[in-house]
Image (tube, rainbow, N blue to C red; front, side):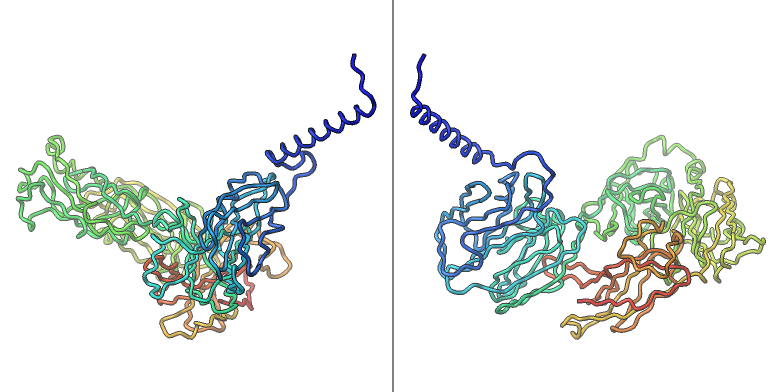
Length: 633
C-alpha cells in the first residue's frame, strides 16, 4: 500500500480541485443554464451592457457585444433577430450571457451604425422582451439623432416587423414588393417600436407580417399596416405616429368551377368563392351553342339570378327561353361565359376564368317541359331582419318565432330556395298577413329585392313593446315557371322594442393634426358599434352611468352600428342608441368616399387616420352619455 506524505496529499487535492473547476467552467460554457428549482422567473430578458457603449463616438470596433441579464434559451433565435444598418457581414460567438458579432469587414468612417435586436426570442423560462433594443454608435464625431416612434394597433404582436425606407428623390419609384428596407425592427409586447439615430431625410414606414422572412412585402401573403403619411426627419426630430394593422387582403378573383343543369330553363353556377350580390346582373352571363351556329339574337338569355340562400358561392340562373325550344333541337352541347362578377372583397373575375361547356344528355332532353319546370317549386326558407334604408347596415340574425326586441320600423326579407315569378308582388298581400296582438292589420309595402327575396317594410313605426304575428302562406305565390309553390303555412311571432328607452351619446371632436387644414373633401365619420350583446364581462375601462350594475342585454334585432358624418370639428351627438356596450371610433375620410381606406403599398397611398376611443361605453336605458372627447392626432 502506497502512503503519501501530508504535503503530497495537499498537492493531489489541489490538482483535483483545479481539474474539477476547469471541467465545470467548460461544461457551463457549453450548456449555459440557470440553476434549477425555485419560483418561475417572469421578468423579461433585456440588454444590460454593450460594446461599443451606447451612443459612442469615434470608435472603429472589430466586434460588437450585447450582454443579457439572463441566459437565453435558443441562441439561434437571437442571431435571427439582429438587424444591422448599414448591412454588415458578421460571425456570431457566445460567452455566457453575451453574444459577440465579429465583424468580417471594416466599417466606413463617419458612419452611424445601428444594431437592432428584435423581440422574437425568449429566455429559459419562456419570457419574451417587452420591446426591441437598439444600440447606436458612430465611427465619426457626429451621431445621427432623428427618432421615429410608432404605436401599432393590433390584436397579435408576435411576428410583426417594421420596414423603414429612406425615400429616394422620386418617392414614387420605391416598390416595397421588390425593395428591401434599409432599417428594420420588431414590435414589442407593448405594441410600440422605435427607430433611433436616423439621418435627416424623408421616410416611409410599414408594419409587416413577413411570412417568408425575405425582407420584402409579398402581395396577398403578408398582412401590412401602412402609416398615415411619410415622415420628415431633420436634426434631432422625434416623430411619433400610429399604424393600424390590417387583415390580409383578398386579391384572388373568383372563378367559375362548374355548371349544374337543373332543367331546360335554369342552371346553377358553382364559383370558387362567395359572390357579392350587387354583381349579379343577367348581362354578365352569356349562354351559346358550342359551335356558334345560332344567331346571337336567337340565343337563350338569362333573365334572373340569385345566390343560394345557404351557399353564396352558388349562383342560380333562370333563362327566358327553354333549351328544349325547337330551334335548339340540333344543339348537343352548350357553353357559358361569365364576366364581371365580383367576390365579397370586390375582386372582378378574370376574362379567362369564367368559361365552361356542358352536354345536354338524352335523359334531360326526353323530359316533358312541365316536368322540368315543375322542379322549380320553391319553399319558404327563412325571414331576415334588415335595418331601415337610411341606417347603416349591420349583420342581423334570422327572425325565428317568439323573439323580442325587434325594431319598431322593421324591414323583413322572406328568402326562398328558388326564384319567384316577376309578378309575385300582386299575390303577396294574399299570402302574407301582418297583425298586432289586438288583431289589427299592419300596413306594409312589398317588393322583390332579389329574384328569390321578398322585402316587407312597414309604412309607419310599429307600437312599442307589442307582439306581432306574421303569417305566410306560400301556396298563393308562384315560382319563376309560374307554377304555385308548395302550400305550407309559416307563422312568426315577435315583440317590438321600446324606442322610448333609447339614449344618446354626445361630445366634442378635436383634430390636432398639422395637416387638418389641407384642401380637399375631408370629412369625419364617427362610428359607434355594439361589441357585447349579452352585457357581460364589462371591463374596468368601461364608462358606466349611475351606480346600478344592471345592464339590459342588447337585442340582436335592433340597430348595432351607427355612423355620423361631419365636415368640421366640434360638438357631435348620436341619437336613438339602444342600451348596450359600444365601441366608439372616428375616421378621417380624406377622399370623401364615406369609408375607411387602409392605403396601398405600391403605388403608395397612405392610410387614412383613425382613432378608437380607449374606453368602452355602456349605454343604459334613458341615460344620456355626455362629454366624450375625441382627439384625432
